[in-house]
Image (cartoon, rainbow, N blue to C red):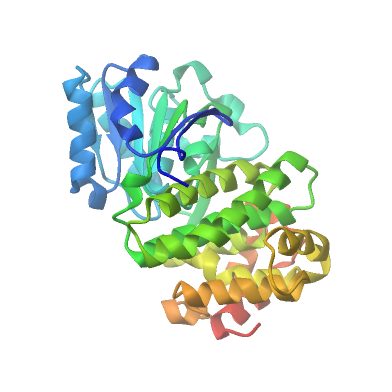
Length: 389
């Protein structure tokens, strides 16, 4: 498919401008949302790169008083959000450009949420109807520009923020956190190194896969999840092998967006454990999902034979059914250089019981096909440390 054909203007689940070079439309997107002084939120690594300088220059050339905030950790914290809110208010900003990987997008959305509120960030944790506490009219507009193909946070209504005092990853939710406009420009992902391409791409797969396996009824999300998985199968190895493959980069951006759209159906044990491990060990979220994937699949096997069978057929795997699907996941991980065990990334069993308890309390656990106990999560975690399927 030519680059010209990889171009679209979509309105699901929000306004999306997809295609090579669409970043040139950033200032138009801001103006259409009434922004005159957007705050570009990104991470320190991206802040030093030409793509951020170019984005700011485009905005300023169009008469926008654009500012920059880049105090964002890889696993973002409440402090990152609070400092960002201070920067937003102090700079007189009226909107957010969330620019980067999942961490920057999550912080950008959280800053837009909190900039006009008087309550505390943790008051909006995704529990019950907490979101109704917020003043919806005070939430700032967001233009989301992902530079990795993994989290899909650009089409999410939540942010995952670490509460450093409690050492837990917390989901902050409000329906109006969904960015108003998304720019999917594959040129912005070309510079990703192979390891990050692999980890973020496997994160996209985990979203589609857990959405597919969630027992809740949502046929539209299930259809999106299946196609998202097909795109990962076809294009992630290409993007990993050749970072300049624009078609592969563009298709992976779409697969990532599809995963986050699909997982309104539910996530599961992969994310319950990955969130818990990320809070304590500060390890890359996508990499954790990639390592945990076969262990959670195996633990859920009795409950997911039917959806995994459908996925194996849709993906045209050589071997049908659960075994064929698991073999494909293991083969894909090897092809992408993903470690087989958590021990290989420096995670040990010192927190075995604590992680098991934390996983049961993570909101993602509610979407798992089997309601694992803390002891079962600890067992899965232990197997993933030792590399025992």
